[in-house]
Length: 130
Image (cartoon, rainbow, N blue to C red):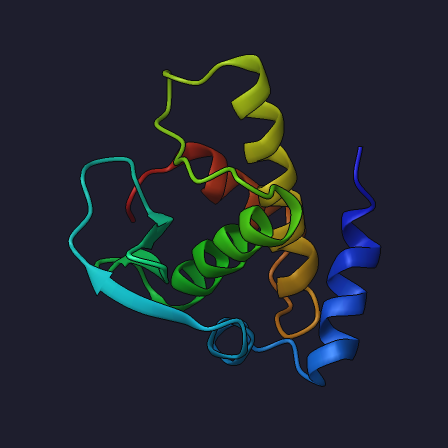
């Protein structure tokens, strides 16, 4: 398994901040807030050589940050993986990658938020809108 705590720490050190919006801009992502299908909070895609992160506009601010950190986790830890998790329709390999992205999100958010890591992971696993 990846050392996600160290990856998050190195990312914060490299960019001098734990702000996921700043990090995403530095990685040349365009962030798009839109209405997402039920149980999908976000996803990232490369379209015509441009990188996009789509986040559900109906989430509250900490949830949007958690989803953004999750998608950054996929980009940084899972090269070539650009899928999204739909509850009840995952397979073993995807589930492992989703769990790693959830853990990465919780680690990165721990630098700027006092929200419990398990609470963040629980929200990301459920995929439900609040």
